[in-house]
Length: 175
Image (cartoon, rainbow, N blue to C red; front, side, top):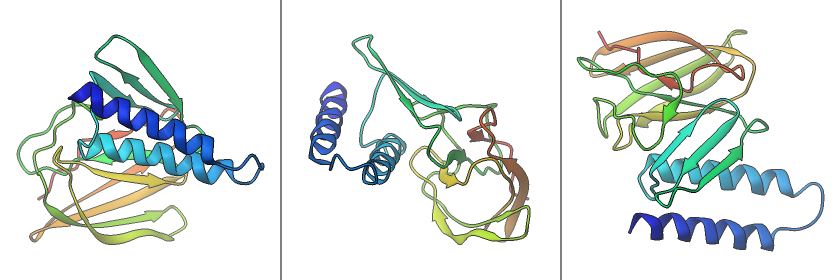
């Protein structure tokens, strides 16, 4: 069943790519949607693979048949996944879309992200996926202050979105 899900997503990606216009201006929007959708599908467990991980440059998918697909994401916004926690966490630098599991599953949080100039980038309620993470796409090459609140508890951290920065934040303990 897992192979079938990944196969369907790959076929759909090929079909959608074939349907896109050949003009120079249309490819970036189509590419952005497709890769972000594929990553979200891994996060929500709509698709699976033997292993899928993401760093600041690439999404790397290792299939159960031993094949590997590498997707360049260096032209996209920066992906970062945050697992707020109260009691249990794990060390992590680059997020495993198929392996990382956060403590607080399908919980709603107040998420506030501000850039270093004080501009509000995100100020909304967000719900963790089944993996206990909140996925964010933030503009690259910046530093952000992140505040997360849940049931009267909160946590704050500074993160950055440079190419070699962490895509997996598991250090934000609610207190």
